[in-house]
Amino acid sequence: MDMNWYDSLGLADVARKVADGERLSMEDGERLFACPDVTAVGALAHHVRTRLHGDKTYYVVNRQINYTNICVNGCLFCAYGRERGQQGAFLLSQDEILAKAREGIPPAEIHAVGGCHPETPLSFYEEMLRELGKALPEAELKCFTLVEIAHFAHLEGCSTREVLLRLKDAGLVMMPGGGAEIFSPEIRTRICPKKITGEEWLRIAGEAHEVGIPTNCTMLYGHIESTRHRLEHLDELRRQQDKSHGFVCFVPLSFQARNNLLGVEHGPTGVDDLKTIAISRLMLDNIPHLKAYWIMLGTKLAQTALWFGADDLDGTIVEEKIGHMAGADSAASLSREELNEMIRGAGFTPVERSARFSERGENAAAKEVA
Ligand code: V47
Ligand code: SF4
Image (cartoon, rainbow, N blue to C red; front, side, top):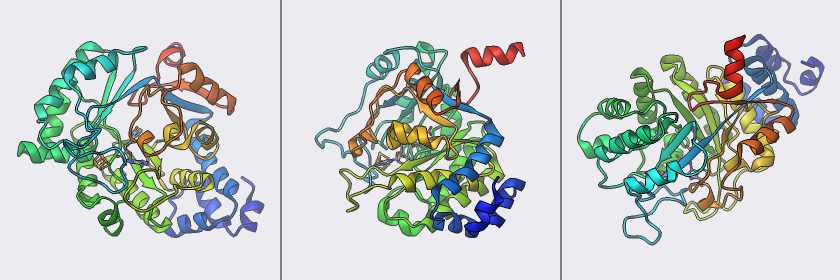
């Protein structure tokens, strides 16, 4: 690490902390956001990423399924959700969900999420998991946001713990990290007033971890929040992780600004994306992985983000609605070969993984022999 460089930027003490593996404070985070040299911030994050993962970059052969866009929450940033009966509203049947899951090459991960439908009972989702498990026994089922868990509990008149246990029993092994948005109540009331609070989201995350369902976690950035709100969000995530240890991967979600009711016309700039990814890597010292989600970033910026602290690109996806309805101009799908090329082209070694980040294919075989 070139200490003279950090000295010239007034960040020698922060760089020293990073080199020593010491936790950064919120003030350190503010100073990193204020640093005009994004490459200096990126190099610090790269140091941490290399310490954790060497030159490995993970990807997954997966299939996203959105089973409904009908949602009672009406978040103002969301271009995907619809009211029942509104044009474009849909709810897939079990057969349609299964048909989507069976399309294309067999996935290692099924990533299925949806809106908070006003009536669909928990038994529908239990059946969905059981049928997916029978049809694709190799796939790990990573389904439902914590927001949906709270909604299912409300509809069912039971506790969120009970919902989690029933879904686990039906085959759920992992959960994605959506619905966290920005935890700050002052922002949450303006962007998603009907959604569960940040406190509730964190409580249910802890509960999922406790019952043996690891989860990812997210942050939706680049809308009306400040860098202070982002840092508070990251700090809350790492405090939860100190307690429950179940967050596997952090997914920064770059705001896609088309078709929203917030009155925001542009998402973050590329430099803001890279800085946010790098600072997230630096702040979240207890969460192992960080995803450059190519759907929201575009493939070129996602590839570049591998030099700014990210170690995962997510996957083949096949079909994506949430980002694309909000204007994401990325492709809908990438092949395993394209993901490998992106990773090799950036100078890293591709590693195929499962939803829970266990290594698969050749990498896993090589590890077993060693
Ligand atoms: O919960 C909604 C966000 C999330 C927009 O855990 C938006 O591996 C950007 O959570 N611009 C769903 N984001 C996606 C998600 C996710 C995706 C990939 C991998 C994983 C994982 C999780 O998308 C929602 C919401 O926070 N979102 N609208 C938008 N306009
Ligand atoms: Fe519903 Fe999720 Fe969209 Fe909010 S972000 S309106 S909870 S689908």
